[in-house]
Length: 127
Image 1 (spheres, rainbow, N blue to C red):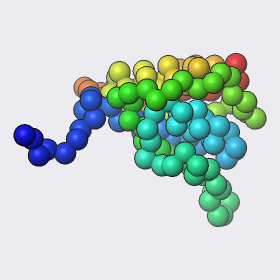
Image 2: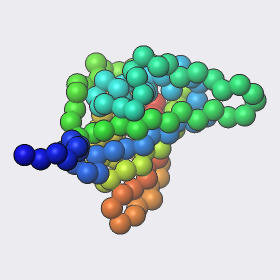
Image 3: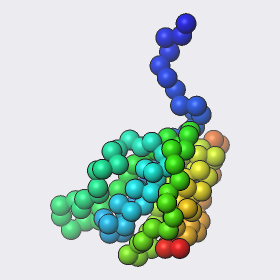
Image 4: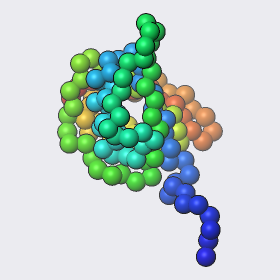
């Protein structure tokens, strides 16, 4: 009998997603699409909100991509293009990109590779 705590199926299954320079409604649309597919560190009912002040707002969430909950229901509306940065293991970041491509046109605009993880920047536009 093991008393070790439950671990994700894949140790590198965590992906941190960051959105900035977009409207809170567009951030909500993107995060909702990801919450449909993967368990996240935030509730799926927690809609993004603007931070007080005049500075830029950044929305961040972490997703466990070790299993897919469901696929998004198809194209999702965006008011304007959204830039999303995903950081995690190579396979995990690919899973985020694949899930996003169910709802949006996804263009890879940059990557930075490390030994066991990568950071990828995606431009999301309506399909």
